[in-house]
Image (cartoon, rainbow, N blue to C red; front, side, top):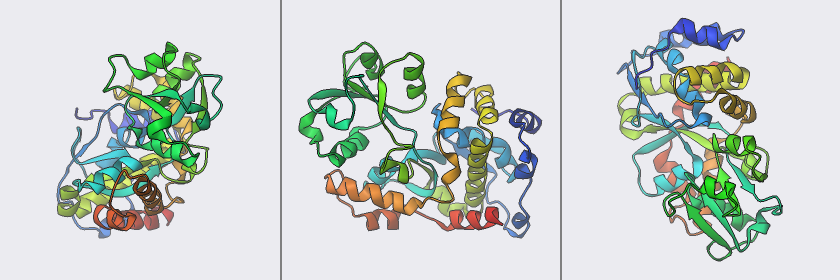
Length: 319
């Protein structure tokens, strides 16, 4: 899908004081080299917490990109633990920045009060792999291989969310728009929220990643993409209602109420303050201790990250 929303439509939707200044080219751009390419391709999988990607088209145009496509190729957002696992397998991705903390919530039956209460229970996962809940279980002393029964979308005909709604499983690990749907239906309660519960709230949940070949071939373009995405992340924090309208109007997600709740709940304003390398190290260390990967945190960070662009953008936007 190629974005078609106009610059005027974006500014009208945002209705945010100062939004126009964010859309203007930065002064530092005059000193930068010319774009190596004017094409950029971004992930479009309908996940609401990825709003910084969905709403970035006009800021990307301001950076000089004329061909902006939403397909799974050049750049995307991914869970930090996904990236650690992928980089341990020598994937072709490079982590460029952290975007936000906490979009994952663990729902359980009302009689289950904490993760320790999941011993002997059945837990469902639709899209999120078991790695994260595996680490959460280990954190409280459970043996996830023996103490928890797992149901995933891959091993069951019914959606795990629907099984939870029907009372056929005991808990469900959800991310947007699943928590919004569960709350709207009055199903269960949250026993862990990665946006507020330690240690998970202290580390990035979602990272911004690029295709390694694109990053290597087009460093000027890569920096401008990073800058546009992080500016859009700021807009998600400053005007969640405007960005929710933007991504619904763009056809990325159908329900405005779910989008607004997601954007209001997720802390998009901490990408400057949190350390993305520390987040990758946190997950890599725990995944290695759990036997989920064999690479060390140092190996993963050395072969799968590039902080040049993030460091430059931080300096520019701070100025």
